[in-house]
Image (cartoon, rainbow, N blue to C red; front, side, top):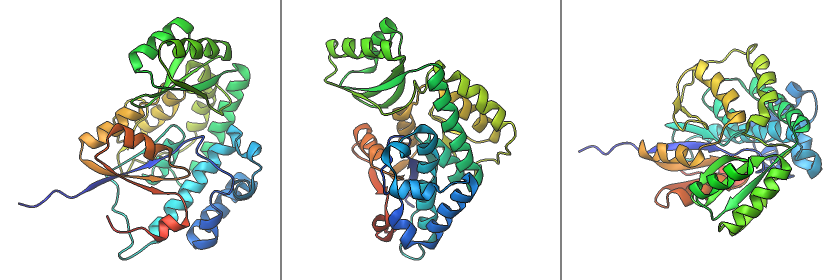
Length: 313
């Protein structure tokens, strides 16, 4: 009896995973990574690479900057990984998925968009989300230790929404700042043992982002999307996207709707994935996957050393 081939999935982090200095080592170690950073600098018209390497942190964290920065760094990692030949190589993914902004990296990984378009679209997404946040000020708070039904009750009473369903015991709420303050206090009384305000510039993944949807609709209308070569698991449905039109719908829908990350990982596991490879800054997604299912293998690739130490799975 022939064993079924191992299935892997590539997963890509979103906003919040960044750090000053990301990419400096791969820029110096891999020609292909260096080429990605230079191409991004040219496409954006300013030195994104310098912002990644040297900051300052408060400038890097700005939504308009951090979104293309994370995408650029992650695509540089991917490019360097693809240059590794012979015994040091990764299996091709059966699926790709990205958390919020990470979905844009997934598009490039699936050859839906080229590098320049992906990075520029991420920059435009960041700009529009920042502007929407100025128009309707809000924020996001991670709630630890409260299950979804209880948090849904808190949201119903305070007027906020669940923005991310990340893993058991870790949810994120989003809304205006006054409502978030009320929801945070009520969540604590209902049993949440920790609440963490996120460093973002608006109530992402709620209807308060509708101005960003309107702006991005116009931008996307002028971009050519290819058919995905790899199934992309959508944030909003936790199901595969297999054609260009669905990709466009997802990019608009995810701005105002909850990120179903736990269901995304569970779908891929149910469909045979036994190894998740997180590519990008930080280890946030690896931690979430571990809390969703302790039996899968998790590999994190976020720097030059990790790339050099890749072994065939």
